[in-house]
Image 1 (spheres, rainbow, N blue to C red):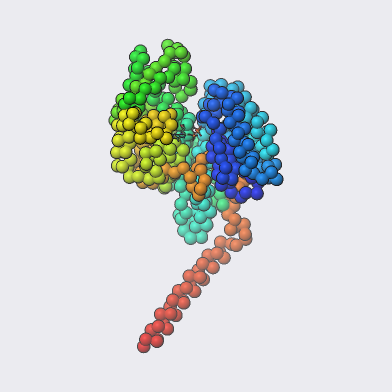
Image 2: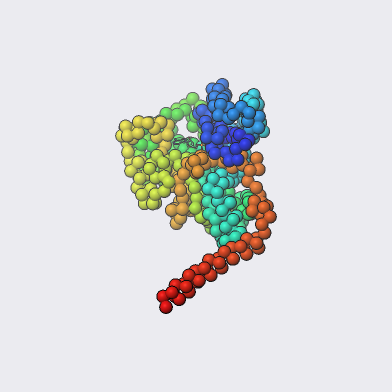
Length: 445
Ligand SMILES: Nc1ncnc2c1ncn2[C@@H]1O[C@H](COP(=O)(O)OP(=O)(O)OP(=O)(O)O)[C@@H](O)[C@H]1O
């Protein structure tokens, strides 16, 4: 769940992450955001209040009333809405009530769409890199193809998004997101894959293994480290619409996953949950039959992409061969060695880095087809001292902080005048140089 606060006089909210934000202050709703509301509403409510109190303390009292607050919920809530619409509604109502009790200018809570999540992440990155301003300036005055607009790869808990400006027009209108920023029109390709966020992808793996293991109570898991054992109830395993409940479903039954640390088996297991066959607009395909034009330009990969690659020492960039060998070495470590080497890393994350690294490689290389453009991806958490995510883009959009017109055009300086000025500056420099050469030739002779 993302929540964003922006003190009114601040022209650029400098930190806007999942959680609550005010200038450089940020804090997260404890646990897994929205799911903690389902499991333990009072604790989640307290955690939300704690965050709001920290934020309140960071904003001068005189600005509280003028500070707009929006709450946007993402894929966790999209999934909950699929399962239980009234529970999703009551959570949003409850959260809204809490926010209304604070002195901010609360402007509403809603579940954003997957396309919005993708597009706002893309806006956040390019806004922080100042690429919209550079692009519109360079695009208009220097070279029509100048300016570096980067693509966005977001890997959340419940969904994953890819967003970029393709070379050619987007062929499927359902994947096109049109924007005009600083006087420049962008046609963005964006797609959100629900159920392919990291938590749900890991759950899909477990459910696939459970389904294919027959009645066995202990199941080998090749993506878990040798020596690691995870016990889960069927209720926990099948608590999401991303996995099909078996016919003989028994919520209290338990299953044990026992790690075998086998990287190549892990990789082939993942191909059972990611459908890599063609789509209707072949060869322009992502995965699961989804249309996707060929990837174009540089990309920033954040959220779970970053967490995993940062842990493995592969962020922000590493050659593909190094990435593959690092993942293999990591997956081959047994659980005792791994925990001894990483005492500060929580087991809930440590147990999954092998699986998540393989899921990431499958999505990037085989799903999105970065196989020939691997070096274009940067694994990043922050840009310009600010966390990357969809929340800042959401806020910028809702508060109309990115003008659709080019500010230079608004200042009244016409294009032809700029072109003439640049032409005369270049001509003057050339004449000065020529004069220096002529004078030095005359002096020598
Ligand atoms: N330090 C960490 N190491 C590894 N994984 C992490 C770490 N912190 C968070 N994660 C995981 O990263 C994933 C993405 O988390 P994030 O909070 O970005 O998701 P989200 O915004 O709730 O997702 P969605 O948009 O799909 O609803 C989750 O699977 C979460 O468990």
